[in-house]
Length: 150
Image 1 (tube, helix red, strand yellow):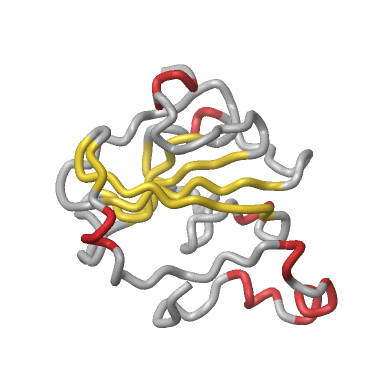
Image 2 (cartoon, rainbow, N blue to C red; image 1 turned 90 degrees about the vertical axis):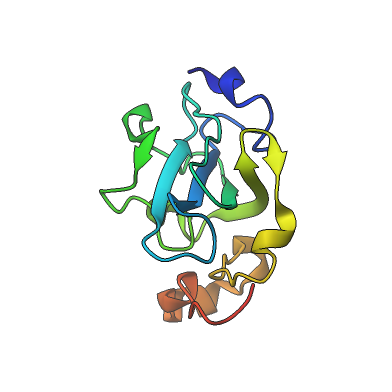
C-alpha cells in the first residue's frame, strides 16, 4: 500500500513531514474503548481509512523538516508502542508541529463531519504560535486536558 493508496483522503502527505492517525479506532468518535491507529508516518506506505463502525477522526499532522524518523512498520496497526501522544501527534516531534487537518470518515471516502463535531479534541500546539519560553517551562502544554475543546 503505497502513498497513492490513500487517494488524497488525508490531504497532502509530504514525505518525512506528515503523519496520519485514526483517533477513534475501532468504535468511532465519542465511544469508549478506542485507541490510535496509524495510517501514515512519512514513508512509502499509507493505509486508506476503513472504519469498522461509527465516524472516525483521521488526524493529519505536519511537522518541521528533519524531525520525523518513524518507520513504515508502524503503519496499519494500533499505536501499541506509544509513539504518538493521546492528541495524535508523534511524541518525538510534539514541539515541531507546523499544522494539522482533520478528515472524518464513516466508510472509505464517506465523510461524516457532523457526528464528531461535538467530540472534544486534545490541544495540538503549533510551534510558531507558542513562545519558546513557555514550551521550555511547561511541556505539559503538549497534552492538554481532554475536557478542553481545541
